[in-house]
Image (cartoon, rainbow, N blue to C red; front, side, top):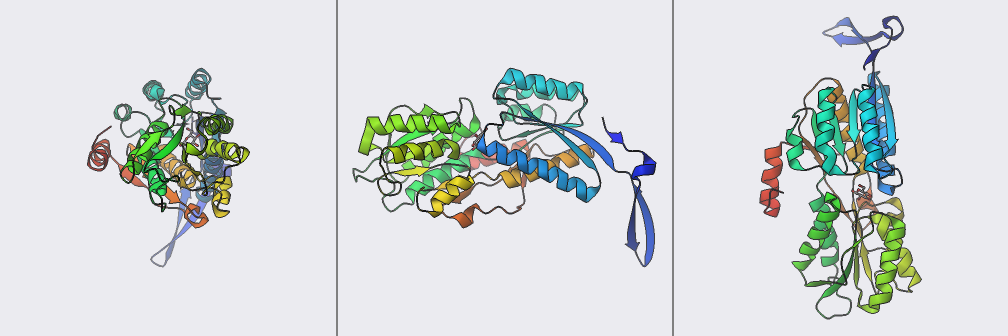
Length: 356
Ligand code: BGC
């Protein structure tokens, strides 16, 4: 629990200029214990996110005089391992938990356990079901990005090409879809909205079933290599739910002697630095910035509010950004958008015609 450093050691005197007089305010720095459960360290995007989160808590502590002890744990993509880590956080009496769940359907159980120990929970990266956010209002929140938007941007990147992705001129875009893990909101929505968006401009046809690469580069390479050998020149566009798998697909495309942006297109999500370099060199069609910088910083700032005993909104959103040039992937601090559950559902209804 919150440890107060010895008052003698830690009394900070802040001089405040006030109407020509000086007042002395005493503030005692506090130490907060924060448990962060990451679904797996072996993930390019979550590595960028984790580093930003750790560094930003240090920065916040330097600015406000508090100590934020951040205990990161690697769930190794195994829900049983992660559940044990979360239970340990609760047993240790952490002041706050930040959870990037292996399996977001377990959010309800985590909230209930944390609530019984009065430990607020911030979910990141993997959005839990809307209904779970009603369980412990004010003390549970999701800080993230709306995955539908990333799918729409992926579809638009291909639709905006002069030929709309139809390299062979047959009036249909023949594509391969490389997906993240089953039941993951980002995977489902990027898949659905990228194709629905492109379909508004040109008909599409999936070459074979959508394939699950589980966000992994080596799997992305394997899936793309198989598709390239099976469908050859018929394959015009590769949609990948993330840049990691897309980088694997790039290796397969190179191996097959195909040339990106000449005889095949590829679009990912994340704007990993490696992909932005490829875009600059003209060797990658486009990606969508999954803004780890703002998501991590907002998560940390919301954490500070909760640690100070405040109640917070159930949703804090940042925007995805369409990236077809390096400038568009530049990271800068931006405002978040807070929403209640009702506002979120209303926006979904208005924008996508469904509250789910
Ligand atoms: C990212 C992926 C990442 C996944 C992990 C997604 O939002 O785009 O790169 O592997 O989150 O949950």
